[in-house]
Image (cartoon, rainbow, N blue to C red):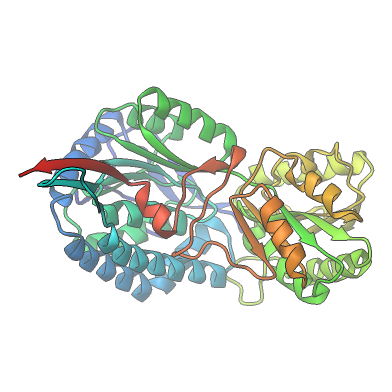
Amino acid sequence: MYTSLEHYINGNWVKPSGDKSQDVMNPATSKPIGQLGHVSRGDLDNTLAAADNGFKQWRKVSAFERGKILRKAADLVRARTDEIAKVLTQEQGKVLMEAKLEVASAADIIDWYAGEGQRAYGRVIPARADGVRNLVIMEPIGPVAGFSPWNFPVTQAVRKVAASLAAGCSIIIKCPEETPGSPIGLVRCFHDAGLPAGVLNLVYGVPAEISEYLIPHPVIRKVSFTGSVPVGKHLNALAASHMKRATMELGGHSPVLVFDDADVAGAAKMMGAFKYRNAGQVCISPTRFFVHEKVYDDFVGRFVDIAKRTKVGDGLEPDTRMGPLANPRRINAIEAFVADAEEKGAKVEAGGKRIGNQGNFFEPTVLTDVPDTARIMNEEPFGPVAVMLRFKETDEMLERANKLPYGLASYAFTKDAKTAGKVADALESGMVTINHMGLALPETPFGGVKDSGFGHEGGTEGLQVYMQAKFVSHLG
């Protein structure tokens, strides 16, 4: 057992009372490293009662005092970075350095929300009559049901936890069963920081059973989900049918625009590293590369070289630059994408195959000559595959970049300010970054449009989704 896989309910670490459990697998070895029990309906009832009572207490705690506890939790996360990161790599597969950066980022997110919660101001509206005071008061929305994914099990959970706690809400966070140990390490930091019982609760189990019980429950007033588009649509419909507010951070299929005046070497180096980060299992991972014909050969050559030189292996090995995919399902999915593209005429410039029979390793892959009819041109691959596409006319390329129902993140490289402005205006994405990696900082809003969801995590916007405005008009 690599860590004690207990649930956190009403301020206590407990073994769930359900009779179901599952093995937690190390994706680098395909061997079990722990066993995780599932919550029962009775456990969920206890958790809901805890969250309800926790909210009634926590909302009365001043934002200043809430911030003190959050900052202490952030300090504990930093102190335990190595411990949490090692667990994260063992259960998820990513390179240890990436895991350490994720945990460090989680501490920064907590710190930022600790301060932002103290700035959740209302406003005064000028009255039309003497003696009248019109006030807008920002209040916490209530107990939250949060659902986080396995690709970033610490930061995706902490964005929901830190924002809800800073706003004055309690939260039940359902973290991924594939990667339970690192969220447990995160929650222990909040517990040890002195968070009152019931304010934060952590459960695991059958995802559909938990979501379909929590979301309609009258205690829950807000839903936050990060995951796939189909599941997000289902949960959003469920939340809407019960008049629950929701934040949906869903999938993407990010375009990268490389113009003929770009720093080709710099763009290839930056996007090559980012493409194979976390084995491409990133919702904002660059995937569809639209490269101007004048620099196409240069860019693709450099990118292919990066793919071939990327060392794949166990994330705990110091020379590894890309770890395994998180589970065997991803191997099957990526093999299917590559096979479909090849059948339709695409050329594999690098990679394209599974590595060995132990662990979920796949080669960093680059495809060219990919037709628009290929599945990978229309469905999010969520893996280490980059698609290279040649373009000549900017307007035609922008139309192709925008044609998918996804709209999470977009990237562009150009030295021309006019081109940069046109791209920023034209791209149908919730986030656009030009000539650098400027996404996913604690102080900036993170979210998509179209099928990539709505609402934000990060930034002032990420706090506001856990609050509601109350208007008070007072005479005398």
